[in-house]
Length: 92
Image (cartoon, rainbow, N blue to C red; front, side, top):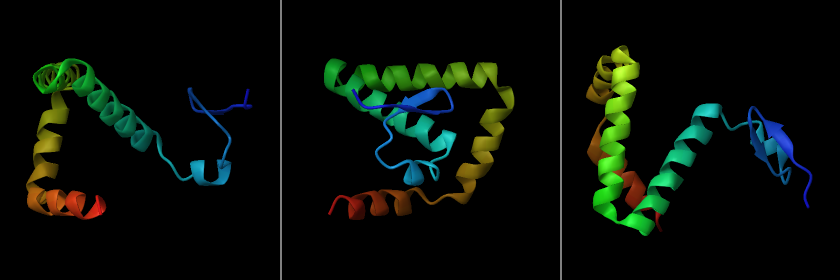
């Protein structure tokens, strides 16, 4: 079994520790959530995944009331079409 090093509370294989130093906790958290949603979609379908996502977001807003306005301000600065276009370009 490969030896593990601890990345905060998440244990990860030491294949390339120098590259792992550049990954932030928030990047790991986002990647975990995206992976969870993909697995949920495969196991239970798109509708269940979307329901979970909405419920999770509502729970986050309930426990962190300021997050909704902060995200709303951030979203006003983003151009969704650019993100969709970039996502399409990354598939090539």
